[in-house]
Image (cartoon, rainbow, N blue to C red; front, side, top):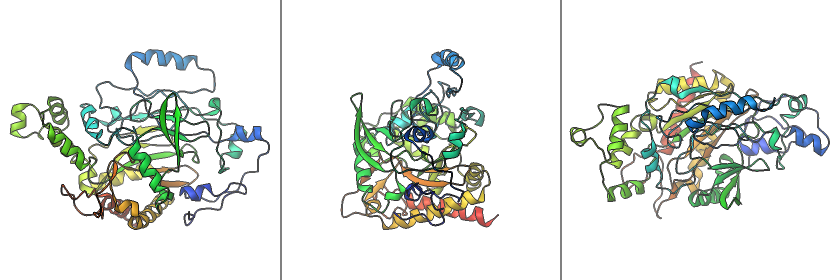
Length: 447
């Protein structure tokens, strides 16, 4: 891998992990080297892992009591959930339960949940009626206690390529942010265990041999826990301290052409989807749909894409977690360019250095996407870009979630910019990336 231009040299003994992961890091004095295996284990960075488990309202009181009874220094995250809200597994939402680390991730029912490529239909089915919910309901604060020992302060910037073993009692609490419960598990070596999905496994295996390897999580094969298979991959947040995280779903559509074909085989009008539609956009149903008080799945799926910047710019913001723990997923109706720019400014807290790092990384990604044999031969749907930065100035962007990334029949290849017409398999990924780069460029030129 090539070191990201402009990234700082690592501390002695730190290896080349950060540049290999594509992290742009501001140069800072190296902390003194630590000695001894015990000290190394104590100073290991907490593994920040993504997972999500909807909070059952009936257990709220019990969870609150559990928090009160916790020993000092042990913190759990508990973020309220409304059962009337949309499914946390579909579009961004927040719910919480204590576990091993903290991270924001948008987990689609297909890729991140490790389900079949057709599961995004269920993603639409499971959404609740709050798709256009107000800010207070979708924007919440999540707080967690952090290890502030002197040893942690001295060594938190030390990076080693060897697996980072983090004792359970030293890990931070986590909260699952959207996705089915049980999709993710923590590994003893700080890696991420993601519920097995054959499609995602095949993609990651091929990407390990592609020019896009520096822009995706490192893949380490299959593992099993409690008779469940998992894909083992790098935890992309392991080298950040209290990071700000943003998930952006790329492309002009989030459903596969195959999903439309399957939905058409059994075109049953759906009253539940009609209710969801009118709850978000009362004028959306046609006169015929109003008469039937129902809509077809295919109609609902295509309508959903028109609500956000997916249709207008080829990407949409799914969710943002700030370093102070504030979580916001109220982006379902974020559609205009100005609204997207405002959300991005808030995400980086008007930090021009971080904004420049993201722009640099996206330009590098675009160059490699245009060279990639994998990218040309795959319909990339439902995949996201994960943006991560922290107070030190480190910043990185990675492609994640490949559960609905499928090969196109040869000799067909995609340019990922052409408008989608059913049958051409174009997904608009590069069109969205072009627009994203243009927005960041304009934001920086206007400063």
